[in-house]
Length: 227
Image (cartoon, rainbow, N blue to C red; front, side, top):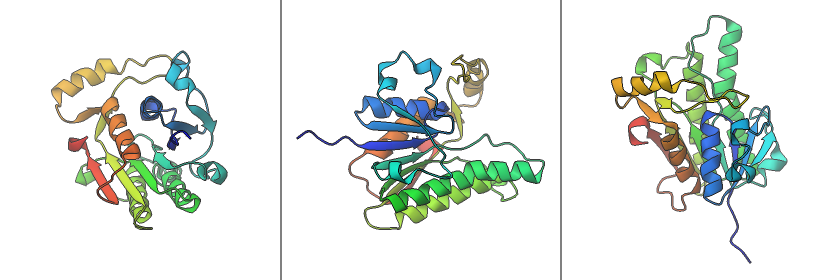
């Protein structure tokens, strides 16, 4: 009998960070299930062998598929939006939903499905931004609290929260066309050393937390400087 592969569900798996996470999971011989609202197979990955081994599925983190979750060993939550100011009640609620409710619901569903390992992508923010009036910050706080509660469920439950500041790396349009953001972020990284971390490093840290066999603590927060 062969060794059982770890099956990892990745919410937000076809996004900027998610595609790098799925690549590393696939190369580590894990079964990666990338879930997103579109369910699309990113066009820039179509010719890559590792991407063909990933299961690209349509789904919603705010209302997870329990049958699918029950087949998985680990959950990775990468759902979120840019930290933009909101100027209406509707935009505030939308940003809170994306950065908070989606992750909280997914984490709760993971606990009900019997998943015992969770990795959540959070964010390192200046103290001045950590206010409930800022929907992005409130959503990240609620997600962090949900991860902490998940880790308290039993001695077997483990949650890791990765908190980068700015993330640099190549982004793509829905059509698979590279966005020229490196022209901006490259010089910015040199002007602000230590303020940006590469998407590759973030993905490596996420996958390491997801697959590491011997976790020393049931709950850990890894901040920007330690990624």
